[in-house]
Amino acid sequence: MIGLKVPKKETNHIRLSLQEKSLLNHDWRIKRSEDYVYLPLNQRPDDKFLKELGLIRADIVDTDFEEHKKRPRSMEDYLNGRIPPEKMDEFKKSFDIIGDVVILEIPDELEDEKYLIGEAALKFTKRKSVYRKKSKIKGIVRTRELEHLAGEDQPVTIHKEYDSHITLDVKKVYFSPRLATERKIVTDQVHDGEIIIDMFAGVGPFSINIARRRKVQIYAVDINPHAVNYLEKNITSNKLKGQIKPTQGDVAEVLKNLNLEVDRIIMNLPGTAYEFLPIAIKHIKPGGTLHYYQFSRDFEDPIKRVKQAAQPRHVKILDKRKVKSRSPGVWHVAIDAKIT
Image 1: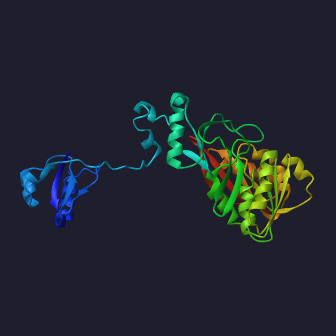
Image 2 (image 1 turned 90 degrees about the vertical axis):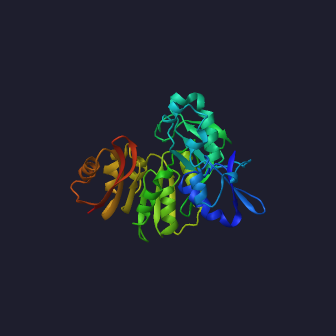
Image 3 (image 1 turned 135 degrees about the vertical axis):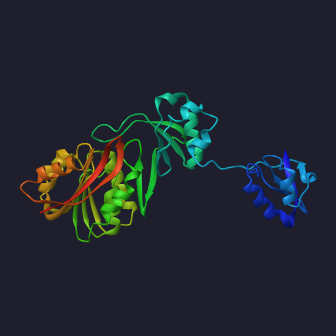
């Protein structure tokens, strides 16, 4: 391979000059001897340029260089040359990382390459287990089918979110790491002394984040017994300022037996939370806050649903935001409303 032999003391300005002319080959390591440095080249410099550098044609040498071991910067880098180029665009490079678990979304067109993609994800993320989504979230317990692709088949993990530690089984419960910012937004609104209902608590990410920072009392309800089991573990494993009372069951039935008016209710079940708006608002004290979530193309429909369910009470919209995209044109939206 061609290189340029230069005196050590001249190396820096010559290297910069070669770089400006795009003659320096960055795929190979610079080689050094006692008195000289050998710079790898993309092509031979002409005599005029060599003269400008104070060099001659004899300084161009044929020598061996050590190749740079470049760390891939993306999943696509790991898969380059291993998956046909026409299929690369079909691969969704976004993925969820939950603790030591990676969950990928791979289209059916890449069925034959799924294990290659799984191994690439394992190497790129440095996690322990890689799974592929095999179904949409379904059922009242909000779980999806997962297929093991690479690493350990270990679905139980501990996810760190800010200073909270959330233990869960990705096969048995619903959890989205993409809601971390949303959970912080809600937590920042809470004050000491509040009584709160977390209506679809899951393994407790909202409840744990709030109780870790605030002296509150939270009633955390979920219909999935596995989720409540992990919620109880998370209550024990996190240092909390507030108290959380976990309850397993249908939230509508649980709230019927809960003779209580609260300061705040969290309704993070964007697919069907609207069905529970009347009973939720019934349990909010005057001046209390509702955090309502819904899949929607705009803010008008969820705001309209909240106002209709609250009649004849007055609703003041405190905030509205897009939490994350669900599909083209459809968003997971959040509505913060004061019910007076």
